[in-house]
Image (cartoon, rainbow, N blue to C red):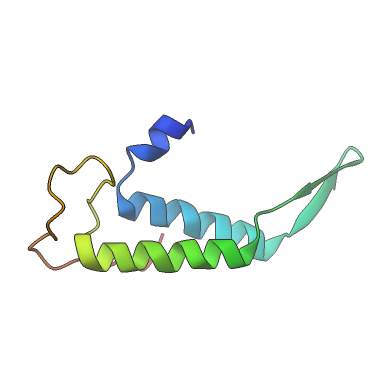
Length: 85
């Protein structure tokens, strides 16, 4: 995924991506393929990102896209927090 694609994701879509990364990181912190070692993301950073996204979803809603919404006013509808992925 290119950086510009990531910028167009909703908060809920970003949360799904972070949770997938957490799942991968929890299952294998590092692995070797053809004598080349690969390390997964730092779980602490991923957990903090997840918490931040959950806070933003609670405030703005699942469909909010950072930087794309013209109003800085909070969304009037109640947020639906995505539990699964």
